[in-house]
Length: 108
Image (tube, rainbow, N blue to C red; front, top):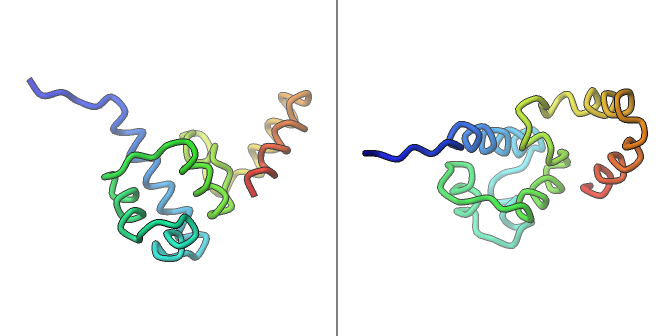
């Protein structure tokens, strides 16, 4: 009996979003690799789904791509609608808004 990975779809979405963010940032795999202090093959393996992505790596990629990390982990947020997310948090959770913005600014 073959085992299936229940997270396969989410993982594919994550790596697709990472690749798109890199491309939208106008960066090559080589440039990202240099910023992270790794080889280009590491970035390629991430984007092919052949290398695991941990939280510190995701945070670093978020900074490099100037994209809130929530974009990578939420299927409801796209790279182009982060301003909409900011307004949603401000409207629905005004007490959390300052903290939310501090986290976003800390990423960049």
